[in-house]
Length: 245
Image: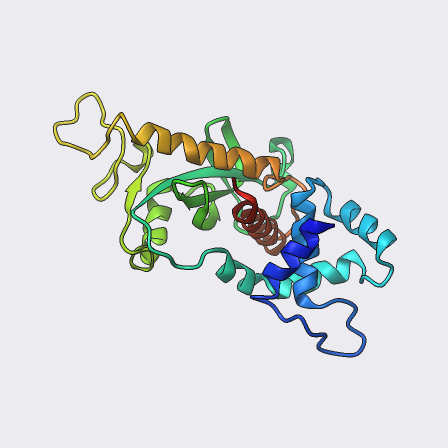
């Protein structure tokens, strides 16, 4: 289980590796390492993964206890996931996060979920808006209702623009506004900063990253609460950043 040991060493830098009370069965650092390991080994179902772990490690808590503890560590996980760093250029885009199938939306009471549009059509839920670096690392992200326009959420991401040393932001035609680099329209009369010899490759990078996140289970219609959605996303993003080529 070399990957779990490696993840544990990383988790110890950000989470406590000491048991806080006598009845605690696993430390925070080991708990996060075990949850991340599911994504490394590409197990689609968290409960099945935890059951397999308990078969080898009888001292582990139940999956419900592990999930509740991970939820309490959610804010720290989100801070660790997107630390500030200097970068010259980032790519921005969004991807759908549906929380139920379309035929069940009338019975869905998920807080904040809305109808929105993606490349595959209409869906009900949220969107993941992200900055991705040239090497494929997710620099920062936000989860917002699907009905919000990409440009609106991009302004929220720009609040941390100074923390990343003021990078250039490369988007698609959905980010057609001042301050972004995007493909020019046929009737454009000014330079949008788009360079055909460079920026299409960067745009392809973020599409590849989103495909990898989907393969890691970031998009699931089994999510029941906003906290579980946030936890699913942050674990997938951290696992992606730690294992990117």
